[in-house]
Length: 351
Image (tube, rainbow, N blue to C red):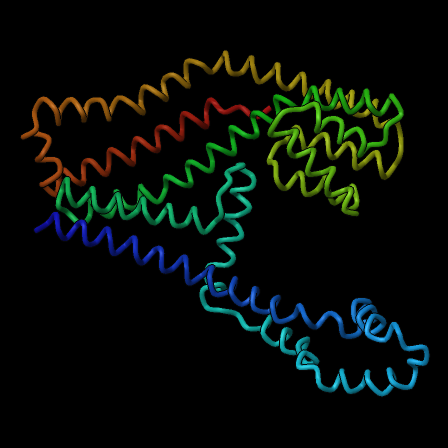
C-alpha cells in the first residue's frame, strides 16, 4: 500500500511540474507567434515593400498618377491590419499570471545556464528539478515510509541542479582562465602587426579552443552586427564570471577612453595574470592537507553509515524509525555541512 502511494505521489508530482512548466512557457510563446504571424502582412502598408508591390502592379501604366491616387486610400481603408499596431501595444501590456510569477526566476536561471555553458533551456532545467524532487520523495517513501524523510530527500533532489550549475560554472571559469594568458599574448602580437582590436579578437577566436574561443567569436559577431566594442566586452563580462578576464577588459576599456599603447597594456595584464596563476598554484600546494581533511570528513560519515546499515541492519533501522534517531541523523547532517563550509572557507585564499 505504501509503495502504491509513493509511486502515485511521484507520478502526480511529475505531472504537476510538467503542467506548470508548460503553462508558464507555452502561452507567452503562442501569443508571440500569433502576433508575428498576424503582423507579417501589415509590412507592405507604408513600407518599401508596399511601394514595390504598388510599382509592380502598375508597371505597364504610363500615366499611373490619378489611378494610384484613387487606389491607395481605398487599399488603406479596406486593409484589416490598419489597427494592428494599437492591438499589439495593448496585448503587450497584458501580463500572464505564470509569466509574472516565474518570469524573473526563469530569466535568472537562463543567465546562470549561460554562465555555466550548459545547453539547456531554463524550462528544461526546472522540469529536471521537478523530476528529481519527485524521485527523491518516492525513494524516501519506499525506504523509510516516513513523510519527513521523504520530504528531506525531495528537497535534496531540488538542490542537485543548483550544485550542477555551480560546478559547471567553476569548471568553465577555470578553463577560460587557463586559456586567457595565451589569448592576451596573441591579441597583443596581432595589434603590433597592425591589426585592429576586433581583428585581433577574431584571430584569437580562431586560434583559441573552446570555451574562450567561442566567447571571442561571439564578441566578433556582435561587433560585426554593429554593437559598440564597449557593449560587446560588457556582455562578455556578464557571460563569464572571471576576475582575470574582468581585469583584461577593464584595461582595454580604460585604454579606449584615455588612449595609449594597447599592446603594451595587454602585455602588462598578461604578466599580472601569470603571477596570479603561479601564486594560486603555491596556495594549492600549501592547502592540500586541509582540502584532504575536508574530503575525509565528508566521506567518513557516509562510509560509517553504510557499514552500520550493511553489517547491523537492525541497529540502522532504529535510526530511521525512532524520532530520536531521525533527529540525530538530521543534526549530524547539519553539523557535517557546517564543518565542510568552515574548512572550505579556511583553505579558500583569494588572490
